[in-house]
Amino acid sequence: MYQIQKFRELDIYFQNVDHTDIKTIEGNASLRNFISGMLSYYPWWIVVLYRIRKFLVNILGLKRHEKPEVLPSIKTEDLAFEPGRNASFFIVRTTKENIYWVSETPEDKHLKAYFGVIAEHLSNHLTKFHVFTSVKFIHWTGPVYFNLIRPFHHLVVSSMMRAGIKRGLKI
Image 1 (cartoon, rainbow, N blue to C red):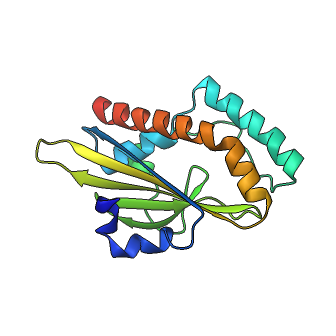
Image 2 (cartoon, rainbow, N blue to C red):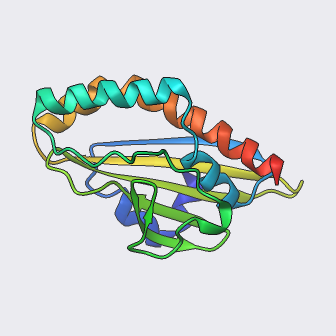
């Protein structure tokens, strides 16, 4: 958390939230490579989890978001870095080239979530990536939904982070 707290402009993504988690990983990737690798990671088991999520959405009466016909593979040079633009299903909120990137999930009735990555450049030419998720519950369905998906959230984010590091190794 210390590395994230260095950037006071990111405080708004941690204020009045109900859940925050931060995961770290080190590797040889640029911030853009890392994020594009994370957002392009769609193994079969994540696709299955999205299908299960669709079932939960129906039961809880949550807003349905359009699912793309083809899951996107985001090229590093095509990763949105301008606030307001879409990056996969996230909306970019604030960025600082080679330093941090923060996005938000589309508007929903049950919760608001932020997903961000802060790059800490280490002296050995590696980068430590601090990946955070902050969640604010809006409706009673928010904590119900989030607590059902929480174990999978940790698994998915950790797997996405490893994919982000692998993307950096290929470039």
